[in-house]
Image 1 (cartoon, protein in one colour):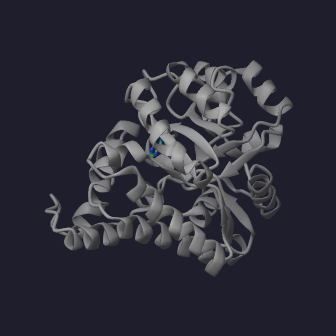
Image 2: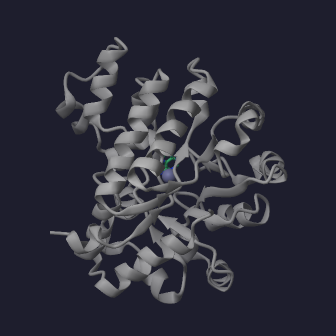
Length: 315
Ligand SMILES: Nc1ncnc2[nH]cnc12
Ligand SMILES: [Zn+2]
């Protein structure tokens, strides 16, 4: 039904690998690693995917990530995502991974990175999907922990292209991470950050001015600040917008209220992404389809959005 959307070549620029963990794989990995789960079956787990805000989702997302233990687990997770990319004509992806979610559970950094990176390299060779991996810091943890993570990552510097900032936004402003971002940039890494998902426009200003990010993840609350909108338009700073995520996490009550097409028509470089597709009901094509159904996105607008994603790549 949405073959015309699948057919558009596109890049995905906002995807958490841990958020692509489908319930079926989650159960399979729990069995493989002999981990007891609080849900009886896949249906019971899916039924728990009802969220009122970002934090309710994150609590379940971190709980789900606990089944990821071995290099093979991280490989399987990443490979399953890449097969979806192939199906939907995502020709380039710049996914996030959250090392602290795993190192804090005692999983060595290199186990996580090796599994993910091997799958991405195989995806390039076997599926023709290019990539750039982004290391995201968890903002609800202290700056010192982010520095420690960056230190652990540096021996593998060439495995990724950028640092990002994710997790609970309210109460954890970008300015808390100014120094660790400066250090990462001094190592030649690109910088992106989640800002303006639940947090105020002030957080977007901080992310731009203090973290010196090149792309804003979400950023939908920029529309509340006209001066910020002008800057984003003038400087053509890309926004990685995630429509299904925003409705599932009640950033917008329903898709009809989403501002992505208003932003597009004002000249903002917006892109369409899936964020955590296993939890929010779909991958990139389903996000495009939701904009068609809920907002009346035209074919011409879909083409512009897909082209924006290719233009907004970091590599
Ligand atoms: N939508 C989101 N916002 C912040 N942190 C996240 N981690 C995974 N998904 C996220
Ligand atoms: Zn995200």
